[in-house]
Image (cartoon, rainbow, N blue to C red; front, side, top):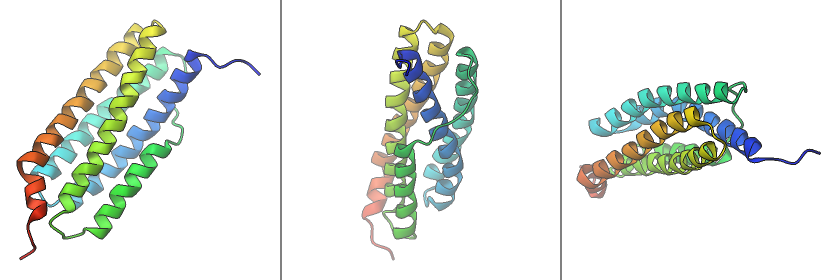
Length: 166
């Protein structure tokens, strides 16, 4: 059996995040539909559009390393999406729904930030300059989205979650 190298690990992690981004792409419309706040709905819709571009960049990274763009089941994202589904079910119509959805979205962002940060470092180590550029662009978007979600939570969503239904 051949020894696994950083190239192998990079490819496997790329497959993981590719799967995750595509899963997120499918989940964001449902989260947007279930969100009660227009600002949160808009944030989910904006991130869906960004995610499409992120998937395209990942496809370019696969091309750079000479591999087919194929995902590998990402158990972490499966779990986070499952939690979001539970929140939508258990808190439907409740004041805390948006806070729960936003928390799930931030869990996704934090996972993505950790994956992209790692991929950037590995791509740099492997001398994949074009991949570094593409991955850094996505990492910056994910960080910006996380910051925007934090501001939204602090400005409105968390306060609204404390109110009792009329």
